[in-house]
Length: 208
Ligand SMILES: Nc1ncnc2c1ncn2[C@@H]1O[C@H](COP(=O)(O)OP(=O)(O)OP(=O)(O)O)[C@@H](O)[C@H]1O
Image (cartoon, rainbow, N blue to C red):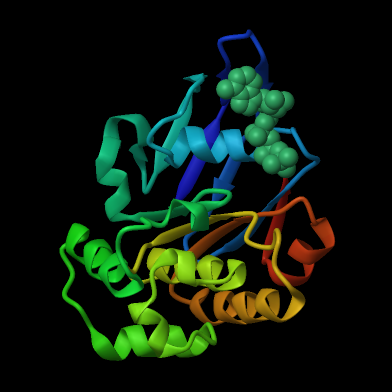
């Protein structure tokens, strides 16, 4: 599914981050762990983001056996990337249902009411939130809406950066149960500085 080899990031201020080689197989649930500042988010941003600020060099960076850089925006056909604080990126001018419609339209998918209902149910989100604008949602609701939006497009690879930050235990448990439910048909990479949390949840934890 994903393979990187000799991967190095260099920022404008000459800060260099070198990564160990990584290989992730289809349908694995992988945790990325490491101390604050070790380069977890930079790795994901450089691989999957749209606006990465540093320079990247590698001998291999493949998604589904294709070079990630040459895939360009085509990679979003296969992946869903929830960066850290992605819940803050919800558009304040549109409601939750419009977010769903835009996401599906952008991925050439039709609106499937039953599927929306099921995901809402699994994430313990009240269906009436469909009419809510982002400012009307709590932090935990926003986070689950962001997760719902990344799952609804049926990605083959789902990447969550720190979904466990800044939420209460019940919300975290709901998110974790949801991930366990979807992991049979999706490859998942989850980033957390909390190693014990990842070890309990993931098939394999990679130290960055
Ligand atoms: N644009 C940038 N320019 C220079 N240095 C950067 C830039 N972005 C990140 N860094 C540095 O790269 C290192 C890795 O940062 P990164 O955000 O990837 O770490 P992280 O492992 O995700 O940390 P955390 O767990 O705290 O979120 C840090 O030392 C950070 O200061």
